[in-house]
Structures are given as structure tokens and as C-alpha cells.
Length: 310
DNA sequence: TCCCAGGGGCATC
DNA sequence: GATGCCCATGGG
Image 1: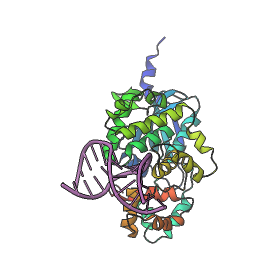
Image 2: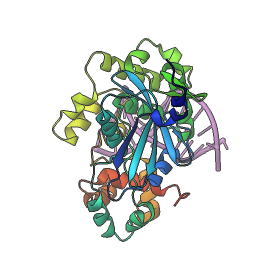
Image 3: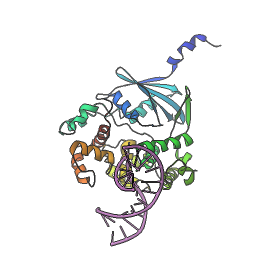
Image 4: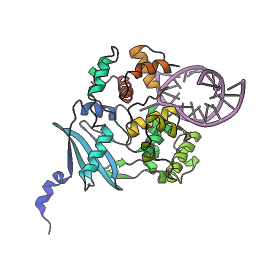
């Protein structure tokens, strides 16, 4: 028998998971980062929330993340999970929630020019890309082209080859899996406006995944970040910049420095006046004081390049 | 027209 | 290890 009364409660029946906000956390700053002015097809940002499709044990779940007082609220608009911890663990990775970033702020305070980063962007966390295959593909796509164009290419790839669910007329996508990419030809990928080289690199990465030779787990098992970088750089299409970006965004390694990154260079030029080219030693000099927090410094430097928002 | 944008591979010396 | 060249699109 149907029970009409239940209809009114449809909304509250969605599974909702609460996570207590850690100290030094600003949901607004995190939301700002996810939004920027970029057309990222992997999530949708609204005024006070962000929606993202995630796969837990091969079942798709559409999350709506917002803040509710002292908590971060994750409402599952589509799908559900048996164990709340799946969602909590995912959120921890995505927003780097479990880290106490106070020591980073103390280090910032000691740097005359950089302390402004704390004042302006307090509460911003590393926003990660928990899918390691996605990080690697994204790096290859984004190499050496402007970000707007890179996001355009990613959108084409994802909309064509990624799974999606539809919610209220909007489509939400998962990044394609290695198995989705592997059967494609260079020509099919070039049709998405990436170069032949990039198409080869992405197919190569998908192949390594399929052969079980490359995965987040394999890299995580390595003892330290230098070993991780060395292993990743062996892969065609992955250089020093990409390897660093990948362990920062995908594995939450804390001492990544994407040498040669134009954003980091521009920010350090603006804030500290150091050269934009051949500046490795100067960059190291700034970063040496941030042992254990280098990735955070990179992230805050990127943040400083865009002045809108608080 | 030239240069740059969240590079990397390769050849060459 | 440093340098130069190629890839290849779009915006300033």
C-alpha cells in the first residue's frame, strides 16, 4: 500500500551525513576555489553548495555539500551508501579536512611578504582530485595551454566517455575510467582538440593502469615523496611538473613543488620579486622554510593570483 | 606579428 | 645539465 503522507517528506528522506568542521576551515574559501571562473565539468558550484558525482563501490552517488553551522553537510541527492564513512573519507581527501594547518599559518607569519596569504585566504584547504587516473590525465591535458582551453578539452573528454547521472535536468559526470579510454584511438582523442602527443600520453597511462603497472596504491606504497616522483617521471608524458602536481592533488603529499609552474612563478614574482625563469634555487630558498607544508604554500600562491572574492 | 598559458620528449653538444 | 626545437590552440 502507498502512504501518501510520505510524499511530503521526500526531501528529508535523502541520506545526509554531517562532518564537524575542523579549526581553520573556511567553506567559502574552498567553494571559491572550486568555482573560480573556470568551467570545470567535474562538479557544479551553487551559491552556498557544491554538487559532485562520486562512485562508491561502483554505484554512483550525487553529493551536495554545504555548511550547516559547525558542520559540513553532505546530502546524497542520488543514490545512497551503506556506510557513512565512505562519504566521510572521500570528503577528507577532497577537502583535506583532517589536517591541522595551524603550523602552516605559524610559518607564514614568520615571512614578511607571505604572511598576507594567511590574512586573506584563511581557511582554504588543499582541494584534491581523489581519482588518481583523473589527475594524471588532467595534467597531460593542461600542459602548456591556457586553463580555459584545458577545461574545454576535459569537458569534451568527460562528456563523451564518462558516466553520468541526471538530476533535475542537469547532468553530473564521473571522469572516465582507464577501461573507457583504452579502446580509443589517437585520432578519436585528437578530435577533442588535444595534440597527438597528448593523446598518446593519455592512452599510455590508461594502458599502464589496465596492465596493473600504475595506480594510486602502487605510488602510495613508496616510502617517500622523492621515490614517488621518480616512479611517476618514468611514465611518458609525466615530467617533473606533472609528477609534483599529481602527488599534491591526488595523494596529498605535502612537499610538492611544481618547478617551472607559471602560476607559482608569477605569484613569487609579485610577492617577493624573484625572477620568473631559471629560479629554481630562489624558489627552493623560499620553500625550504616550509618543510611539511610546501604543497600548502603552492596552493596559497595560486590562490593569490586571482583577487576576486574575499 | 609575437608571446605566453598551471610542459614534456627528444636530439644535440 | 643546459639548450633548442617541436607540438598546437587561443587570447592578449
